[in-house]
Length: 114
Image 1 (cartoon, rainbow, N blue to C red):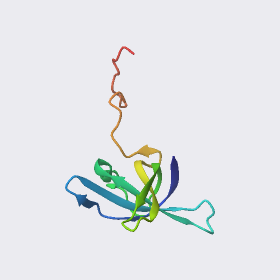
Image 2 (spheres, helix red, strand yellow):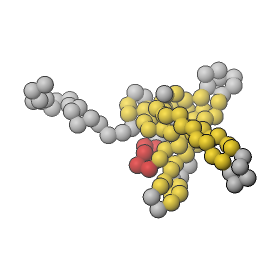
Image 3 (cartoon, one colour):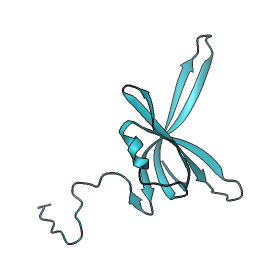
């Protein structure tokens, strides 16, 4: 899934445990400019660095997975939680993740046989 909007807020990475970190950001989505939506996304583990180089106010496309969880509290009450886990961020048509190893650069000869 993906959505395009304006980067409204960037939060600092949080080290939740010794082996788990996450980072949250807010996207302003204005399909109807009169009634914008404010959508919270999270980046997990090594994806936290994807926000580096972005600034609040930037227009970007967020590629994400929708996740849902079921949890039963100590009193036996069942609760459901949803999260939007981003895995790629694009600005002005350019991806903010590692380039493909087969991607050739302008002026560079591609000598691969396939």
